[in-house]
Image 1 (tube, helix red, strand yellow):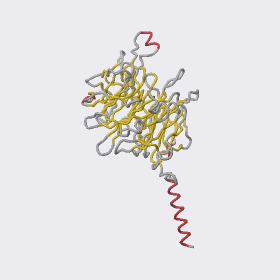
Image 2: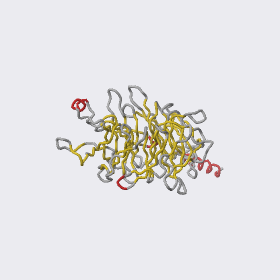
Image 3: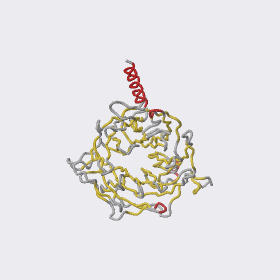
Image 4: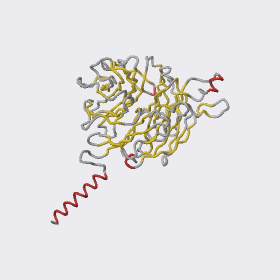
Amino acid sequence: MKFRKFGRLSLAAVAAVALGLGMTACGGGTIGYMWVLGDTLTSSGGQVAGFKIDNYTGNLTATVGSPYSSGGANPISIAVRPGGRYVYVVNAGSSGTTGNVQVFLVGGDGILTEQQSYNTQGGTPVWVTTDAGGNFVYVLDQLDPTNTAAGTAAGTATGNGDITVFSINPNTGRLTLVTNQQIKNPDGTQLTYFPVGKNPTMVKTSSSGCLLTLDTGDQTVFPYTANSSSGQLTLTTNSVVQLGTANATSINAGGSYVFLTDAGANQIIPYTIGANCALSTVTGGSVANLGGTSNPVNSLYVPGTGGTNYVYVLNQSTTNGNTPNSSISGFTINSAGQLQVVADPKNNPYAVGSTPVCLIEDPSDKYLYTSNNGDGTVTGKQLDKSNGQLSDLVRGTSFQAVGKATCLAVTGAID
């Protein structure tokens, strides 16, 4: 009897520990957290769906209190400060409302709590990213401050966008504006933003300290170097890069490479990134997307095993019935930076939900997830880093988010 009682107590203790770690009989505990933005198309503004990521299956389960208010209208981009304690959501705004950056504190089990909201220097913010050290937030505005009614009337509007730079307080997550120390206004004050080209849509940082902005209005890339101590951005000596593309839709950086997707020609263009953020086209040039795919809108660089790395491209549509309507194209990167199709002819390209917009890798490097605007879902895929192949998750691949899903972000342990 004593032995049985001891056994029951031991089992109870194990169960308590499992529950404390978020483990269940069907899963392996929480490996990280995910937040997915959703435009609800109502006056109440946008929302953020929160999920826990199961370690063993990649399955998503909602966090307590999800969905959360995004703190504004039309949430469009999201970034997590390294360490996972603070989340930054960019709300682009809508007619009658201005855009903003909403700061969230991440609590236990990935629960979001609204902190403070900040305005950017320009209009219609569309993208946010942080530096690798978690010291600065960079927010991309489609319109710089000259593009106001007064500026247009005075003939001083540039039609260009800008980057608003904020420093991050590591203890509170709060933001402080970083002014442009290189350019002054006519009145002698420092400019409060950093200019970029026309109709910018995406900005990404590289491991070499470059900040690269894709300007779809004039099909250019603005390459800035970012000072890791001050947050200052300096336009590099090679200045603006003329892409010569028909319709560049996204820019991403990984390792020593930069990848552009061009929906106009349904191609991917790899570049090497060198000194002073200079971009040089990889030998062999652009690479055609997989047959049947159409409208590539984003990509993701994923380090593999054994020195092999990968690029995954999001396609919103198809040109024939033999290819999934929305899909991921998988490519390997060889030693020269050239792209070659992942060897998986029966499955590559890989089917995802309707009209995907963003793609991310989970903190354990085992799963990929897409946010799908057309049906408001998240698609999960298992990743084989030895060969680049993707497969469906073992317990279902599609998870309902909220509203018209836009972008998503993940974090692992919260420091």
